[in-house]
Amino acid sequence: MRHLTILLFALLLAACASTKPEIHADHLLNDHLFIAPATPINAEEIFAVSNEMQAYLNTILHKQLHDKGYQLGLFEALRDKAHLRIEYDSVMTKKAAQTFETHSGNCLSLVIMTAAFAKQLGLTVQFQNIITEEAWSRSGSLYFSAGHVNIILGKKKGNWRGGYDSVNSLTIDFLPPEDLRGQLSRPIDERTIIAMYMNNRAAELLANKQINEAYWFAREAILKDPEFMSAYNTLGVIYQYHGDLQQAEQIFREVLVKEANNTSVMHNLMNVLYKQGRQTEANLWHAQLEKLQPYPPFYFFNLGRLAMDKGDFSKAKTMFTKELNRDPYYHEFHFWLALAYFQLGEVKLADEQLGFARDNSTTQNSFELYSAKLDKIKSYASH
Image 1 (tube, rainbow, N blue to C red):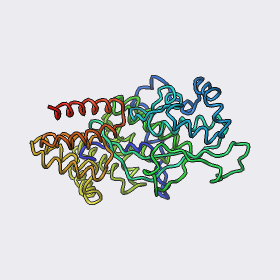
Image 2 (image 1 turned 90 degrees about the horizontal axis):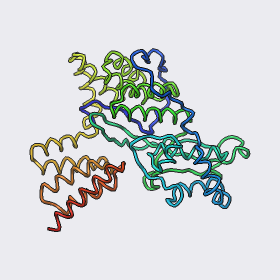
Image 3 (image 1 turned 135 degrees about the vertical axis):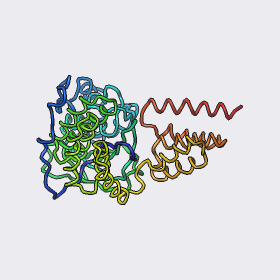
Image 4 (image 1 turned 90 degrees about the vertical axis):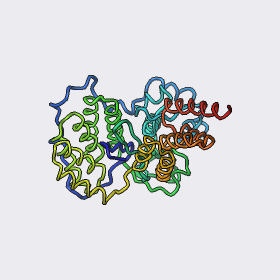
């Protein structure tokens, strides 16, 4: 997924521990280049329990917690649409109270809300980073990589003597069990979850062209967890979009000292060098990238789009299918394959792919868009 500026979103992905020299964040922050945020960023609000959440605990959930225990009672409420009725929506990473109020949120939002409830109930919590294959998405010229976290609910604090008792703990995950079977995990601190939240918000604001506000969230992510590498890359991209190319270059180079094979950062550095007219140096990074990642994310998809523009729908179908073989769940790949099938007169297959696009959509807007297009194809096929 590149050939354009790439933002390593790491929607829940924490950097692995490293023995390389630490990055000292202070000299990478340039507050003087940005206007102070309209609303101060308060990390304590992320896990704050609203009055509505507390009322829910005291009334609707009270009997279930009493009958089934706090861990199992909360788990069943989270998965039962008759209780919390939380729908997946990736538009914005939300605080606990926002997720509860809107009944929607992405994976990180759901983990944050679960932790807020668990803390209010006096349960111990442990966050986990799940080691999965990278899943990519895009917004305009920005490309995002998404990771995954879940949460373990432990005993009430009064009964806890340190460590986690696997018999008396419960893991809550918002992905289907079959998607996680065999996946490795590692514990992460709450400060990393907070940094992930801040980094997500920075990326989301940047995608909406709110560059100034994005800076302050990326800054906060770095200050909350200086070891969370994704936040540095996000900050570098923010500098790049703000026109601060020297600052962007500096931060990308420092990340590469710690993570020498980080292809996303390499690509961002290469773009900054091109923008500064340093063609020869940029070409060297390009050659290194081609060796490390000859077929980056969205590579075949972009070839498919070019083929569609040229009217070569058969080639487009082949390219979109290749991209789907690498990431079978990304809705946009299914959508464009559906368009290629439709242009080739394969209406039934187009209908099937649009159904996959709708079912794998990650926002309400995209779900409604694909549903409408699916209705149009069905209407066309019936005539």
